[in-house]
Image 1 (cartoon, rainbow, N blue to C red):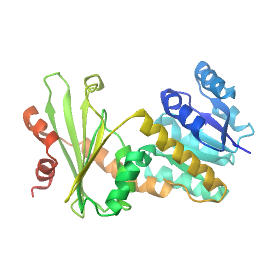
Image 2 (cartoon, rainbow, N blue to C red; image 1 turned 180 degrees about the vertical axis):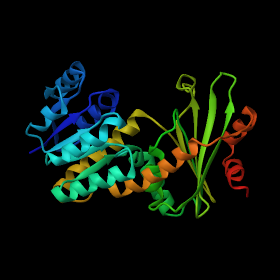
Image 3 (cartoon, one colour; image 1 turned 90 degrees about the vertical axis):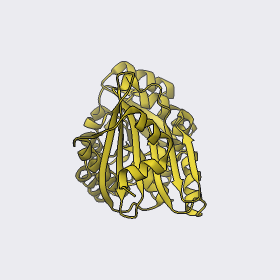
Image 4 (cartoon, rainbow, N blue to C red; image 1 turned 90 degrees about the horizontal axis):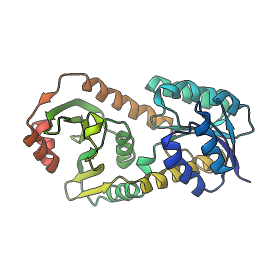
Length: 308
């Protein structure tokens, strides 16, 4: 018998990624959808033959075993805690909460109620990411010295993927960044973390967002003996999310544990918050030409940041 789930949040992410992932996942049945936009709730509910609700409170009164929370970050903490207090298993969008402290509160509540929590960090479980993890674990790249992410905005998810890729994250040693003006009128910004073992993670994005359409999101892992590259796609997101949904279901039935649980989420949020703090510091300005050279050479990025 399929496990009945509800969805809180019927926005773009729910429609473009959750809808196909849930359709493909085995053992899950969508019973209800809630959104403050009642038309959006009805559209998504109709796709599953589910009931549309006008509020999260109404959905939590229904006969569902678990709830998917796919709302904007500013709303997530309170709703997620309410889901657990209602005795429902929780599948929450990433990042799991706004702070490491909020993640700990969710974990405490889940333990008290004996509930399963999975974090929808699908980027860490893309098929390409799974292959990268196998390559790193097998030593095919040698020691990983640099990891880079090109993205359209400053975001959290790459730290989760980095954590899964390496198995454990070394202690962050320092944060930094630089920026350059673009001929388009926007700015390209680099953020970087140097870890205690020498690994450097960098993230490049362009803002304002209207200038970022030309960015090709990609992920690069550079080791002493080779480099891996993959590009973002909707298909990768759907496959990763389907895997996490099925792991969430298995954990509810005692057939495993959450693939990306709250423990990992707490560590990754702490790193993300450190980088956000660094983002508020003055950036080093460099020329657009130098920024382009950095984009093409991970050795140059590492040297620029570490000085060696």
